Length: 334
Ligand code: CA
Image 1 (cartoon, helix red, strand yellow):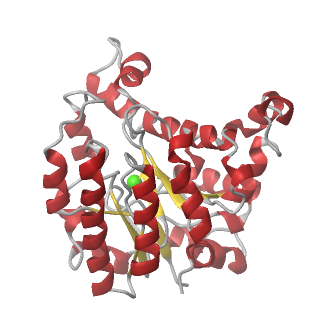
Image 2: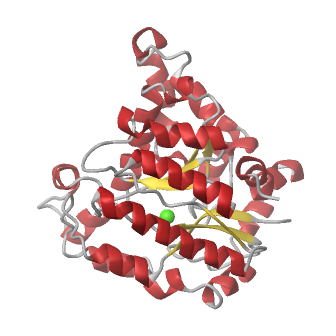
């Protein structure tokens, strides 16, 4: 069975160097944070590697195609003027990678969110000139969430081009990390994990997507599609309650909040191979709204992760949709 995975990360030293010139100002990471990354087996080399460990991993895990993305927004610290150029360079580099192995890779663009009009143009350039299949975004721009009307041109362009926006976690704001997640009752490393990959940044991006729904983005752009990793970033469990309290009479939306998740959102595991979560999402949203993703290189698997899907109780028809059919349809992959 053909396997396409859609949350698979990449980095390039030139882009990391360009970014490093701009110190992160909206987040002070706990000093133990690097240890946490180490515990996740993070290595820059694995992110940058294409022909060695990455292709080996894909072959071992029976992955035919990885949809590559930069591991975070590449320009989140960069002033608007420079962000446009850095993103162009980053997308040019990524295009070079895809060109080298067009049968094994596709790509999501990285966008200069600091300059929404230019970001929309960059998305168009990447899709039309390079054949990119969408964009991956995350975080905020100087404390602004992307439901702010300033960012509308980006989503409008994605809908026009009929490519999805994939939402990726980023560090929650410093004030959020400190208030909710750090504590004198457990070590800072635990707090750092709790604030980020252990929970906090999932809630953060889940909330961000819920804000997008509440902004009426899908009433304005009914064709717009979002991809939500980590089985929906905590939101699926709350949808019934959200529908119960935030009804169209007050939201002013055309539909219930959950309706937009059923119609406009696609879910991926991002490497969380939990049988119960998988069955829940397939049951609630349907096999036609699940796309496979392994979050390379942050997660490693002792056995072939593809077997998790192939050995599930789903029909072959549903497995085909999740393994490649939905990705081919939504991302227009051949
Ligand atoms: Ca990821």
